[in-house]
Length: 225
Image 1 (cartoon, one colour):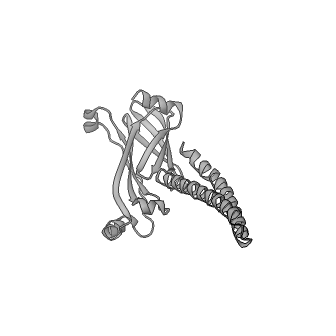
Image 2 (image 1 turned 90 degrees about the horizontal axis):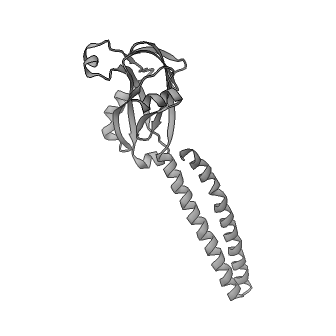
């Protein structure tokens, strides 16, 4: 459904253009008949002109509404992660991130995987103006379904941060109180089961990160979770 919004938005530009042009033509005819002092014909053409121009405005407002909905529901694929089981409760995870040129490989222990991120969410007016949520992937870790294993068995957690140049996040925390267009700044974590050859996509939305299964193995892992 979301993928169709840009197409719908583009298609609505045509009726706006057509009805607007027709309204302008009728408006010109109304001015012509007014100049010729043909009041009745001028009134008729004016009614048609106002009707088509009004229709153009209504369709334009619908198009603007669709555009704002599209911005508020925008999603961006930021990473893909794939798993290969190498032993009991042991998996090789390969993370392909949009912010990294090369794939990263990790050995995770447990039954589930978890990814943590920091998110900056803008206020709705700033979002509609074109600012999208910003993120930084922070950690990738393995999780045991059994709480006792989580306490005592081998843990696996990896740092995903990269801070080239000026550290943006600490600076943002200091400036947050003075920037009215920052809605919130928070941590976001998602976790799903691991399975042999399962592939998941990590997606950034305007409300945080989510994950989606990308193949049959991933779908079955979630179904049996």
